[in-house]
Image (cartoon, rainbow, N blue to C red; front, side, top):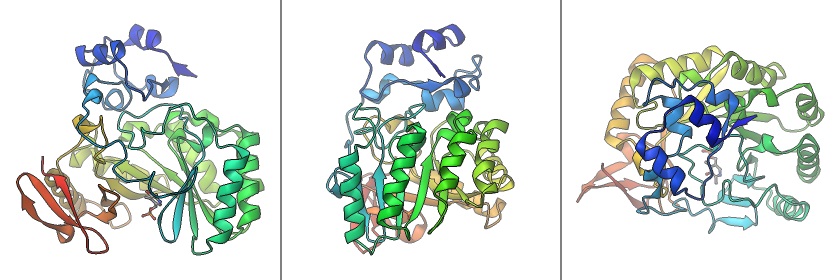
Length: 342
Ligand SMILES: *Cc1c(COP(=O)(O)O)cnc(C)c1O
């Protein structure tokens, strides 16, 4: 199911920076599914799939915060982050089928805390019952679909029992990294809970090569059931910081019934600086895409501002100015946050 370090070494010759990580690894483990590993072109040291999943010693750079979105401060219960009034994020597990090197939740992901326990789940359900202002819950982590079918079935039962009116967002990278997971048995679990408010499928595809026929087939199983699909991409240096690549990605997504929703500026998370694209370059790409793509194919370029400032659309409107190499942004509610210009 996944390729080990030994296996990946039989296919690709590790670069010095990659070798150095394996000698001195970070807490976010190395894990890549066979499906994704097979997409890497061993002859291309700058392969976009490789950049996202094969670790690099530059992850050891300790300049940035481990929790810039202040999710710990916004935790309502052990696993529920309530940052925005009408929506909340439930961290159902710390596990993924492959670990993205740009992971913004690396304080939590792959840390071996495992799937949500029954008592943590009940606490979250209780909070959701008390907080009727919450209309949407993101089932995220980690990856929701690393849970067993039994665990998933139980999770959905408990949440639906507490609040049948909650829109549940099924947030997953597994359609891209392990599409074989979406078999008849799993889809039967989803179908069983399709009453009350709708499900929404939230995917993450960052490069057109991730849209394999198997991945598209996995997403289609949801869309055919009437579950809309939305994609959140992360703008990544050397992966998709290019108008041609993003135009192809967004066009293919829409063609396959997946609405491009967000294009995220990389968060200021420790260990991801080498993958970040300068905001000014991002704004240029955004303007270029706006000229090339239809409104339906166009994602919203968005930044989740540091110090828990929250999400704001990245347009000239939220950019107030620049001072000593730092860009000054206004938060949605009128605050100010700094983000490095380069
Ligand atoms: C991004 C996020 C959401 C969802 O935000 P939308 O803009 O509605 O997609 C909800 N909760 C948390 C903690 C988030 O980071």
